[in-house]
Image (cartoon, rainbow, N blue to C red; front, top):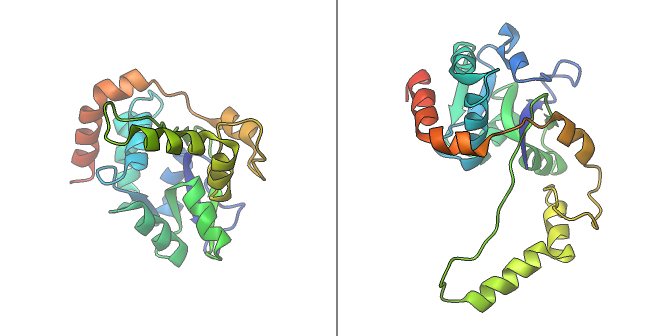
Length: 202
C-alpha cells in the first residue's frame, strides 16, 4: 500500500491537485489539509517517520505543514471519510482506502506524488503458537495466487508477478517511491513521534 495525496473531486480538479508533499505547503490549502494522527495509525506513523528521517523534509517540513493548517483525524477511516464528505480539500491518505471509497461512489481521488511512501505488509507466524497448522494454512492462502487476487480486488498491490494487477501501474509507483532507511526509522521512531507531537501540540 502507498501513502500519497488524496483530494475531494468536487472541490479540487485533477489539474489543481497537489503533486508533491511540498505542494501541500501552498497557502491555497491553508486550513484545508487533513491527515491521520500518527499516534493512532501505523500507516500514518510510517509515513511520518519516512519524512522525518529524510533530509529533504525532517521536522521543518512538519512545522510548515502545521503552520499551513493541517488538521488531524483520530483514525484512517475518519480521515478519508471527512475528505470525501468535503470537510477538507486535500489530505495525506492511503491509495487503497481512497480507491475503495471512490469505487463506492465517493468524491475522492488519489495522487501518487513525488516521494510516494510505499509500505509493505509483512506476514509471519508467532513462535510456538497454539494453532500453528491453521496459521500455516492461512499464511499459504494469503500468499497464493487466489489469496493475492482477493487483495487486488480490494485495491492492494500484490507481491506476485503472475496475477493481473488491474489498472495499477507498479512501474510508475516504483519510480516515485521514496527510499526509506528502515534502520534509521526504527532507531529514531520514538524521537520522531515526540517531535511530531510537540509540533502539533499533542
